[in-house]
Each structure stands twice: as structure tokens, then as C-alpha cells.
Length: 367
Image (cartoon, rainbow, N blue to C red; front, side, top):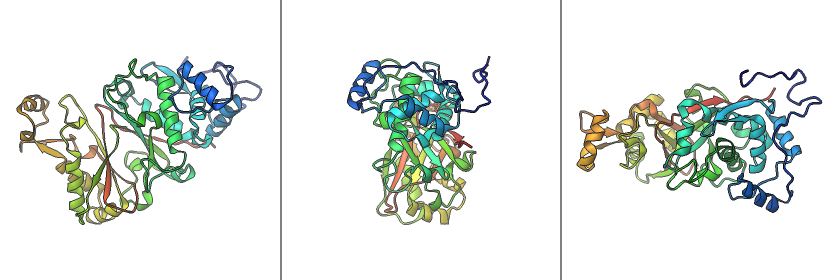
């Protein structure tokens, strides 16, 4: 029997007719938030922040917005190889405070993170401070009020932090990422509590949306293994080449994971503010030209490093004929999107981790 096969008659639809579809164990717990949070922490379900008790009524409300059967297995999550059902997603979404309407997005995000090329097992176990960043495209950005303008990477009051937190609770409670047990992250990151969830300001972009360029039109989520976020500031430049040079050279700092000789692949993500994007788009209407420019600038001369680094970098084929080492191996591994406020001056860069490769999935809304 496969994961999706069942002997239950489902002709009545996801509502369950007279059958109780919910299969998770019931626990008697105080519904006071503080007392429930203390109880959940002793059970190992919490992240240290207050948790909303996942009562049957709340879980059913979330399930009703998913349009899916509660026992449908969305993915097997690593490192524990646990089946992540729609019901498990709903329970953790309730505890995190994520709105019921976010269930389709959460399901798509789980599907994206579970793709084999995303390397979830390694991402969860590494000494690095990587966290899946979730980028949202399509009309669902407006429906769920996912931030894509001023303050999109943090600080906007809305559901994005709770949605990100729901995914983090799933990684903790279903996948089994626990610090000092299955995860050896040297420092961790605040993103391992609230996640990183933001959208693309498609309406201000001179290029096709990121999700569409990665194969999914309309409502889409892209999972990207981010080593946190960092700022690039330019108060002097006023041309496309000024901005692209500043972006590329800022990306190329020696300690970035992309320069590790052990990295078979590397990617980088750049969120360009709408002011710069307009200038760049007029000069380079083809996104491939933008990627090529950033790729060319995102390199360091091998002589910039101690001689001890030269041999292992050269051995893995990273040293170019001109004596430079590129942060990424190919221009198409530079992911460019438009997001951020209209104040200009700033650009956001999110470096990738290891062999974790970006994945994009459609958000399937219930009929």
C-alpha cells in the first residue's frame, strides 16, 4: 500500500461525513495559553514562545480551509523520516497562530522543502545557520497579506511571522530538528523561530516573477536555504552598472558558503528594491543579463586569500584562468527578485548553504 492508498470511503469529501478523520493522540491540557505553553514545553513541542492550544475545533477549522483530507501525507520529513500529514500541518499552524487561510501555502511550502534536491536532512543537521526562506508569488500575497514592500524581511505586523513559525514548528515537531541532538548549528538564527516568509513585489518588477521563472506561474512558494539576511547599501551609485557592481562585489565576501571548496553547488538570492530595479530594468530588460552581471562581479582574486586556500579551491575546479574564484558556478544560480521599500539605497542579499538547491511549488487553493 502506498502512502496515498486507503480502504476508507472518501466519497463524502474531506469534511469526513460521520467519520472522525482526526488520528493524532488527544491530550488533556489546560486551555490557558500560559499553562498550555508550559505543558507543551515539557512535552517538547514548543519553541519558547506562547502557543495556542490546538483544540479539536481549531484544528478542524484549519483543515476546512485546506480542502484536503486530514490523513493525506504531504511529505516524509527528514531527519526522522516522519510522515507529515495535513492534520499535522494544521495542528502546528494552530499552535503558531497562523491563520487557517494559510493552509494551502503551508502545504506547498512543506512540499517544496521535502524535495530531495533541497537536502532537508543535511540542512537540519548542519553546523551552519541555515533556515528555509519562503518566497511567495502570485495573488495569494495579497489574500494573506504577505509583506513584499517596506520592512518585508521583518517588522511588518501581519501573519507572515506566524506562518513562518508554523513551518519551524513542523521542522521541530515532525521533522525532528532539535539543537544538540539532530542539529549541530553552531549559532542558529532568529529565523529558526519565526522563519523567513516574504513576497515579491511583482507589480514593481521589470522582469517576470521569480516563481514563474522557476517554473510555476501564479500562486507559488519558493523554498531557498538561506544563511540569514544581510544588507547592501549604496548612497552614491545612480546607474544600473553602479548598482549591479555594488551588489556583486558585496556578495563576494571570502567567508560565504559559496567559496567553500567542499561546495558542489552554490546559489545566491538578491532582493532588489523597486527604485534600483526600475533603473536596472531599463538598462537590462532581460533578467539573464542581470544575472550575468552579478555573476561576473561576485568573484574574488585567489591572491586575496592565504596560499593555503589555493590548492583545495583549484583542485575542485573553482579557480578560473584569470585567477579569480566566483561565488557561484553559473549565472543562472543568481536568483534576482524585486522586494523592499521605495526609499531605495538598500538591497538585501541572502547567501545559500551547501548543496541545498532551491525548489518552487504551486499553491493549490481548495475548490
